[in-house]
Structures are given as structure tokens and as C-alpha cells.
Length: 233
Image (cartoon, rainbow, N blue to C red; front, side):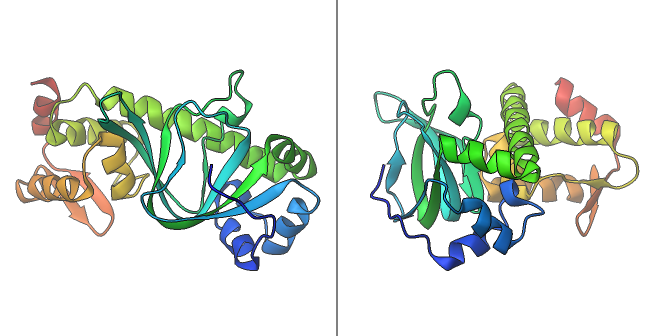
């Protein structure tokens, strides 16, 4: 872990107010919740490794600015990116209270950034002080589990077109009317294990082929049979 500082800059509390764990909690309340809790502040530069796979995870990393790549690196140095993390967001919130609290991934900075570190006991204390934080923490852990389960499920499709087809058919089974993407394109690219430009190009091709239509952020399936054939080929 990189060197850390006990003094927390004022702007960090503003950043935390936009983080999922503090949804519905104001800046003044966040400062009060952190008062007396074991917290520290860290700055880092791009391409720095913040933590290695297998490191003990004893303090929650709350990424407030910048971005991290969560990667698995093999003995030959070949890396598999599991997830992109963009601040403000918590890192591995579920691992903090695991029976064996070890990081399952390497954390590498993709951009310069900042983070707040809160001890395990400090997180418990904040949960005790504010039920909103507790609910947000549990929701974040559940969302991460679902996202990773979905990511594993999409591995069975070989092409981006197949992944998009399966994704839109699933959306259509859950939503009525125009389909709204629950994630940003960057997050969906992460889910599929592809680049954002490649995903955008493939989506545009499906719109050009009139398999999908798009108006603003809303999509509609124009040729359901074509999507089903992509999935079952």
C-alpha cells in the first residue's frame, strides 16, 4: 500500500457525497460520521500499483478521484482486467468482511487519483451510526456480486454481437416499452470484456442494420428474430 496521510482534505468530503455508499447523506453528515473513526487519505499517480493480489484487505478503499483497474496477473505477467473502477466508488466492499479478507485482484491506477481509507472497525462504526450507510453498503456488495455473475455468464458468447443480442433480449424480458440501459456504455463494455469503442461500433452497426433502433438513450428491438439467431448460432 502507498504512503497515507492522517489529514483528510475538505474536498474529499464533497467527493464522498457522490459515492454510492453515501447516497442520501449530506457533506456535513459525512464529516460527522467520519469524526473519531480511523480514516486516512492517500494520493496516487497513474500506473502505480496500490495493492497486490493476495494482500490483506483490512481497510476499505474509497476511491474518490481517478480510476483503478482491478486485474488478475499470472506468473508470466499476462493480465486479465476484471473491472474498471472510477471514483467516487468503494473498492471490494464485500471482501472487507470475508472470512479470509485477501484481495482477489491487483489494483493498478489508470489515472492519477485520491482515496480515503477506513479501517474495518471504522466501517462498522459508521454502519452503527447511520442506517442509510449500512443499507448502501449492503446494496453495493449485492450489486457487485450480480455484476460479476453477469460478467461470467457473458463469457460464453464469442463475439460482441452475440453479447449485445443476449443483453437486449434479457432487457426486453424485464422492461416494457423502450429499453433503457441500466449501466453506462463504459460499464457494459466492462461487463462484456471489450473496449468501449468496439461496443459503440457494434451497437451502431446493429442500428444501421435495423435490428435495433435508438433515440437518445432509449433502444427498441426492431428484429427480434435476428437477435435470437445471433444468440443461438
